[in-house]
Each structure stands twice: as C-alpha cells, then as structure tokens.
Image (cartoon, rainbow, N blue to C red; front, top):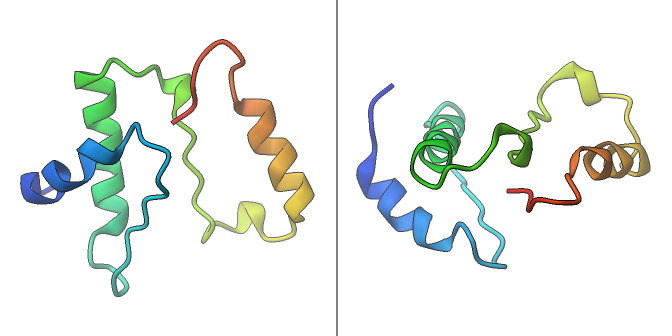
Length: 86
C-alpha cells in the first residue's frame, strides 16, 4: 500500500466532526485504500477500538437482498451504546 500523507492530512481534521465525508473518484483510483489508511490511523494514533469502526462494502453480494430497514437494524445493532461509532 502506498502511503498518501497529503490526502490523510486533509481528511483527518474532519474525522470527529458532524460533517459527512465523501470520497469520490473513478473506479480503482484508491478510495477504499484511503479509507483503510484512515482506519489504520484511527486505530494506531487515536486508539479507536475495532468495535467502534463500522465498515461496510456495498459492492459485496452479502447486502444484495437487504432492505433499507434491515440495513438500519444491522448497523444499529453493531453500535456500542457505551462508545462512539466511527
């Protein structure tokens, strides 16, 4: 994995803010890789527990037949009441 400190330095100040963060780009340009780098940084530098990180890949067939309500209930069940989800 090629480190992208420029991207991370621009994104990380907004991680703990109420703003929605959107990474866009053409296919296979590294959006998922940048998200993995952000997760790694959260674990190592901010000491965020794995249980606080919710990561879903919607290109997976796993969610193909899931309704919006089912997805909502799935995510809600994974959120720890005692800790903030990221």
